[in-house]
Length: 225
Image (cartoon, rainbow, N blue to C red; front, side):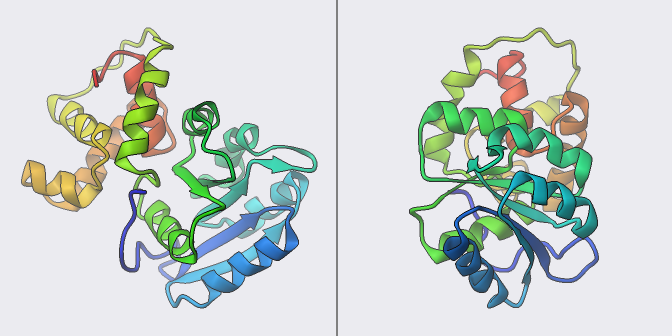
């Protein structure tokens, strides 16, 4: 999993990163909330057991990160990802899943998720994943990303988007599974500059996350990995 080791970006208001947990398993959701609340830079702001409740809470709470279960009583979490940006544009979505099936992970990425978090992982994985998502990092291991890229490539799309040479360089390094700090080191620029490049190319591609931008670029032939 590509993650940050220490505290990540502050929340949108400059305070702790605000997290909303959407999961119908009460014990798991409460446990996740307690784990996050124990971290000084993270703040759980609510638990939603259904998508209907999530639709109510998202625009009211505007969390920085959404931990979203795949299977919920009233719908599919993957399909809900597309709604998140409309309800809370500042929110990064990390999918909670017990499955590592390629089609589930690819669907999550193509829907705009910042990555996925395995329910079989550790408490440290949860904390690191939330921090990574808040810092606009891809919450996925380089090995998993490389495994998934061929699945994305099978669905070619025609796109006339023009990326700058530097934006293409950044995308190629994202495809290698590098964090923003590692990309900055490779290109000899600041992390802030890398974030700006990713924001610009994501806007051009109509993507809501680094992984979605990469998915669109691969399918469109803008990146050849």
